[in-house]
Length: 232
Ligand code: ADP
Image (cartoon, rainbow, N blue to C red):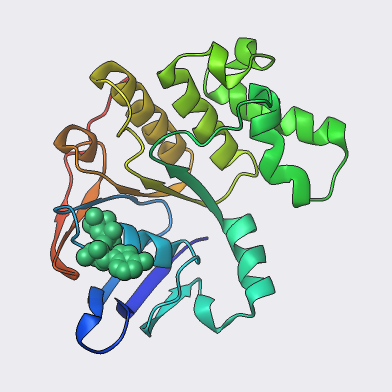
């Protein structure tokens, strides 16, 4: 389950005349299993919104409810638990640790979870296998291609099987062929039940979403069905 309800979310930075209102009153609902694209010009408030959805950035006002729980009403510790159990994150650029192997990078989010090293290794190998990267497990990030690095980043995001995947420009560093690969992986993950919320500038990527939220000047200005390209 991962029903997400944003209730009049506002986020401002700074005070007085210097204050910037990055998100100014957004309300929407995302149902379990949706694949959402968030689009809008640079500076529109997309990343700020994603940070709030990611339980990383408290709204100035408004509420974020997930399965009936007020996320910013939780203690910091409980919110960290929520983040760990519910959410996977993929950001632009891969943020892999260069001196750890691909496998060790994917195992990182499991460091704070219970379970033996063998179990965690098994989970990481399974995530890599879903990305078609089983044979790259022992390589260092410097020894694989950009498209493969992004797939490692996705494997790391889903290794603990979160119900929700949040992605900020996941194809921003990739060429069009690798972008298509990542989008078809997202579509498969979504078909297996993961809710996906993806910020993207790319019309091409947005076509893979089933619903697109358009953001301008911190407001939600459109909420339309996406094209939902079905490949494979
Ligand atoms: P987008 O992701 O759509 O490019 P952002 O959410 O990054 O937009 O930014 C929305 C607005 O909020 C911009 O005007 C940006 O400069 C401002 N902003 C974002 N983060 C901060 C911050 N930490 N401090 C001050 N202003 C910020």
